[in-house]
Length: 120
Image (cartoon, rainbow, N blue to C red; front, top):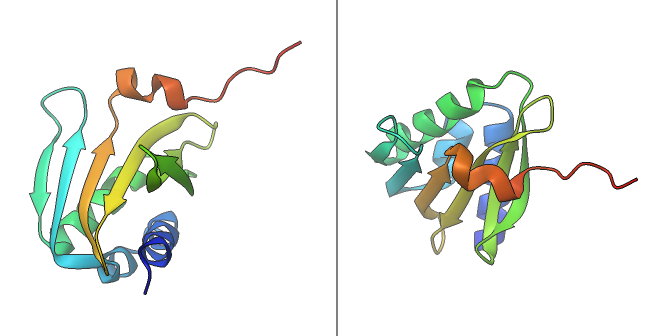
């Protein structure tokens, strides 16, 4: 399966809060770096642990939507709250399965991802 399809599969599973579906798209050696902008961030290793961490973050925002996005020029994703605010950005990398996940929930780093108010 191509990298883009694997990422789409992971994002669709994340949208459904499906831990098993997210895990299926990850490498056994998956590695998550979570930049929260404070001490709550950190690193997580292993397919199951990374999948649980990602779904846990998504579930902090009931009604959140997960959609694909270009992150640093590569396929990734955005988690937006029910009100439309971007609450997380994911960069995903790997050959056949996703091995590296970088996630930010740091407000200062999400500022440029926020929707712009309509121009009058």
